[in-house]
Image 1 (cartoon, rainbow, N blue to C red):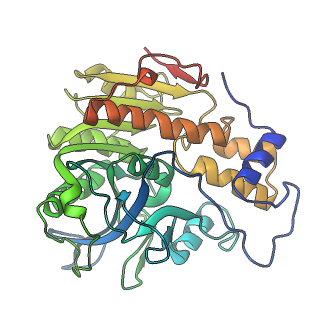
Image 2: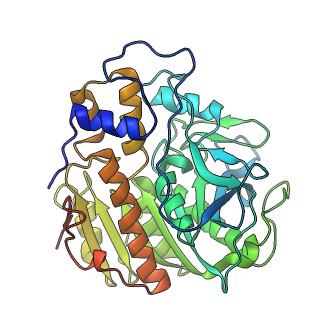
Length: 387
């Protein structure tokens, strides 16, 4: 069943998010309204830290002659403390956010960044053992922030989550203030894959007590001891979902993979896997996209395909929530909004984003079974199981 977006429903979502501008209001306030994110549902506070990583084994022709590949990453984790000593981090820094908004067809100063639930540099919550790790790869012309809702959800339930900006295929700011944006050069899922393979090695460094940050900036207390480098999952949206499958084909360290509407198109192509893999499809579903059906047919391990009615390509990421707020601020019509995010209600989309990936990684990284993955749920009538 599709939860249709109506004018009343959009206003309700915007009010819940803290955006008070009426749908029909043409004027913007002098101060840009602040967007908000929904709170994660887990029992733990969240900490986060940024890493500047340099792959000295790989030259990057897009950066310039003789320059190595540089990446920005973030680590999210359950934290033992919050408060003013460890301030909350924004969804995205101001400078890249302005560029990101403009690329999405909005005025660059239409709104300010939402604040995440991540306390920067907070000490890691002590646990009896090491924590499973989940890595995230974003899609084309995007950023590592674009699935913060899900990233925070996993961290609040006891996961360490590592997100990666694919430089020159997204909007990135480095510690020295440099901004990089998508280029016109072809950036393939294999390029994302090579980034992630490098990051997997840096996760191993962290777990071994080494600091991979290029400037060796301080790490949160207890971070290395919390990471289990033998228990890693991965998910990605769009191109990042294709990269997830490619990484799993290259590196056995990734034990389970989740695709958020990935097209599964690459050269060389994605091949079959013998480890758990779940598809959350929307526009790139198995009926519409031959490459997705081919990938599905080659899966030899545990597999599952679910699909939320009314979801478009961005239905399983932060855009579903944030664009509803931007629609309220800018006076977007119902038809315009549906054209951007489909008919899946943003609040329902958030619950789906939080529940199904968590159940998947709980099952395959923690061996905690959830009935949610056994079949259709009354709690989520929008979600269909595709045989």
